[in-house]
Length: 356
Image (cartoon, rainbow, N blue to C red; front, top):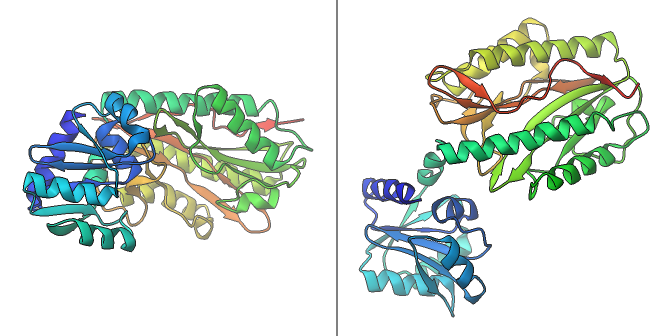
């Protein structure tokens, strides 16, 4: 944790801020290790305070190593203001993308220092995963892989999307996940043409493709995997759609390497899908960063200008969605390495026909 605080202090110096107030639950946990739901970090050149209420004092003492724990009895911002005055802070950065207008009004009322809106400093740090983070992300990916193996034994005509979604959730929790990383997507038949078709009570029928997009929220980190399977033999058109996505995904995973921008990575799969005549049906980016949040930097899309670098973890998830017919998405999590990338998810990707 200390290296993260040291880096943040350097970044504060670069924007000429004496300190920063961190309230985003994800950034707060990243910097302090605190897993509770209420509290803020006040970090300056010399000090690191964790401000919380009586409910979390003992938890904070246990988790927030290197922080001075401060209990607020009035408002959190009033206590922050007291610390700002006591330590001589004259300029305070705040997370502008997380701060509501109401919170900003409270800061103006209680903080006797110049308020500086800051964005992306901690998120930039979070893009580069250390060895401990990668170990957890690999474990989270393994839980998702195990869930796929399990669910293929249950998928068959007559079950509902919701039953499949619930079974994935229950199974991942049994493997140690706190929850799923996001609302699980199970989209079958014509609904597989919906990129974000969250599970419904639709009954899965023979001959349909079923797209399952899910992940495990595990030890504070997310996995994110998508597999599409056939329940019974699919039509020739659905087979063609699947094959196109499968080959595009393989090409992208094989080619992605450090130095490549997010848009260059995206183009590998997009160009192939376009050449096969399905370009108009691939409407989202190839992927996104993955870590403590299921969607974070860097972007792997036509707008992804940032170069991919070792330690970054991203998803690779091309898809084709043909309205009224169906669709396919295949997604893996990868970490960028010195020479290329390493897959974290290992579930089979060849077209699997189940439930016959």
